[in-house]
Length: 397
Image (cartoon, rainbow, N blue to C red):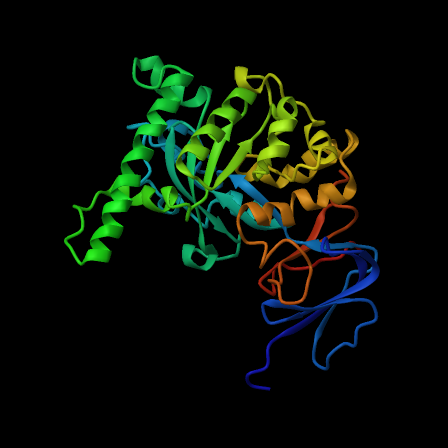
């Protein structure tokens, strides 16, 4: 009938709602692009398409809140020429937009979709102290970025530690030290605060606004606390440095990587900041990751610190469930594991009102796996995004 929304019923699987109990032999009813009902023995509407997921695990679509998908192009034959992840011309590039390097046809977009991911966040790398904005997106089959990008999911990248030092200090430029990186960060945050005050005063008094400035305009929502800051910080001292800066300027801060978070659990408990932990599979190529431990998530969970996990990669984001499996082997609970790649990641992206759980009214972003998703033998059998099987469900015969 004209005007009726498409209805899909997924039935028979182990339904992990993340919002509450896990339902054996459960059902999920999808109407249009939203979840309409979740439960057991639900009535099947007339005309609904039925997917039999018996023996499978049905979960919220997986989320990686920190990737560099597409901005580091794949295949990447000449990283210096092909990669768009870092603008090396200036350590302060607040006006740079990850959106302008996002290619929906990049092979990594398809790779994560095939693995059960329905939302990712991508953006600039960490060469610059202020690197510009990233975007949240859903890995749909489309060449038009507007079909994938999630409106309003835009955050500002900042970086502490070795990367800015290595990229600029080796050429004798600021920052050469961690002191220099923090100083370089504080100065451009001071200017937009005054610029923001001038804009508000001009609007209030009906006067001529100050001369437009691209870099300052980009940082105004940051200093107003209207745009989240995603701060690269591996070492314990770098984590605490960016916390001091955030408190000085009133920033809405998310801590990214948190490799040595286990050393300052008391600080993380007190500050209650969003934490994006990972990657946890890496070689010790940088001194700041020498302290990497796969039991960090378990220790943070035990301390009551909320976090999500990231693979911090491009197409290898599809292996994030394997990272999670290693964390389970080192003490992370199964509930904590699911939360780390669903609702907790959605909270970091400020999209938990739409994503991260199987509940009525939320986006119909669903993944179906052959078994428990974090076991190496399991594989994704179907990925639904906004009520559409972007990876058509194909049961194991």
